[in-house]
Amino acid sequence: MKWKPNRAVVGDVVLALVVGCVGAWSGLVEPGGHEPPLSPAAWANGAAQLVAGLALVARRRAPAAVVTLCVVLCAFAATLAGPFAAYAVGRHGRGRARDWNPVIVLALLFARPWTLRLPPVEIVFNTLTTSLLVLAPALLGMWLAYRRRLIQALADRAERAERERELMAEQARSEERARLAGEMHDVITHRVSLMVLRAGALRTIAHDEVVREAAEELRQVGCQALEELRDLVGVLRSEETFGSARTAEPVVLDLSALVEESRAAGIEIDLTVVGVPHPAPPVVARTAYRVVQEALTNVHKHAPGAAVTVRVGHTGDLIRLAVRNGPAGGPAGITLGEGGTGLSGLRQRVELVHGSLHAGPADDGGFEVEASLPIPPAVSTTRAVSTTRAVPTTRAVPTASAAPGSADAPVTHGVPIPPVVSAACDVLGAPVGPAGEAVPQGRRGPR
Image 1 (cartoon, rainbow, N blue to C red):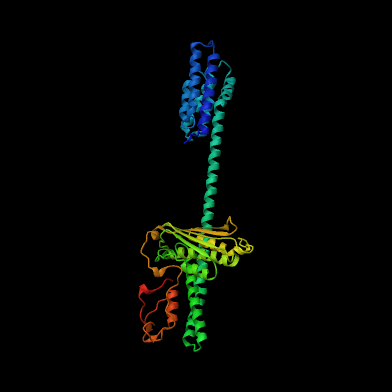
Image 2 (image 1 turned 90 degrees about the vertical axis):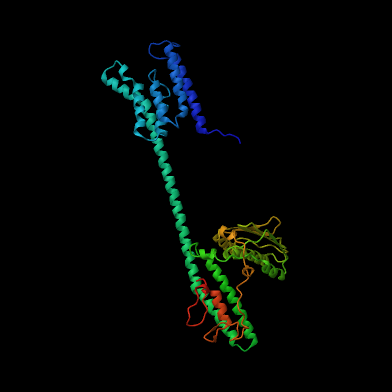
């Protein structure tokens, strides 16, 4: 590893060498007073100047100690390092009052008013002006330190304000998602459930076989719509609201049916599964299914006849999806502009489960969609999963072929319930049991 020197340390070393050498030279050549150059007193003065200058190396870590050393060495002569040490106290000191005592003493030692043979007024004036050589750098350092702390405080305040804005925005988004989920659950789901119940009733009472088949098809589509609506409601709810859905019975991602449907539509698909599929929360598994479904839908619309590769990777705590298609026979029109609303909505759905999505043109002129969906650790450690809960298969519901009064149809006080009612109640999570009796708590579906 290559060592990179700190600029502050290098600057302190250079400053200490320059001040120490210049001070030592001036002390030897011009010792002051009546001492000749290179005399013993001059050598003592030069040594004091050199030691005081070299002590500036520690001016950032121990400014009070450096200025105290300068005070002691000023017994020989006013050291050149004194103003730099005073600046370090104001700039890097802790702001304690006792740290300023050596600075005041150093300023008096620089002025040396007791050695002056002048009128009192001139002694005071010379003392004040000479003391400024020490006090001015100290005050300048104190002002710069205050300015630095003020800027840091403003930066911290701005950062806190930004975090608060982000939290408020996230809270607003969570509340809006919860409101939309409530509206979907209370209004749309209710309307679709009525459609399912009426379609089932029509299937039961109709005599025309064509009407019965149409009603049955409508009922099955409505049941699937209810299942998807409930999944969307779970995605829209916040972590606190649908946290129980994350801890619900895990499911295993199954794309075989979706791939077979696309192959039946004339698309050549190569499906590759890497790793052992692990159970995932229903919301995560269904989101992965929707990613592949949306990608294949875009291939149907924008690149008919193109070869498609679907790659699914399982790493225990992550599901990686990659859907790539080659160029279409005609001009490709896949963009993320006006025609990319499906992918934009899909990206938001992936982000709701803390995943990431990338969609864009491929190098060969085709298109690629890649997604990574994390699996919570508590779920990724689960290994035992029933295959009947594999995604994307819908709930197993009784068909309308169960005759009233048969063993397959639940009854209340001897009155048979149409199978479609049982199916709709099972999808909606509503309790079904003997009339006039309390339904066991374990049979109540999620609200």
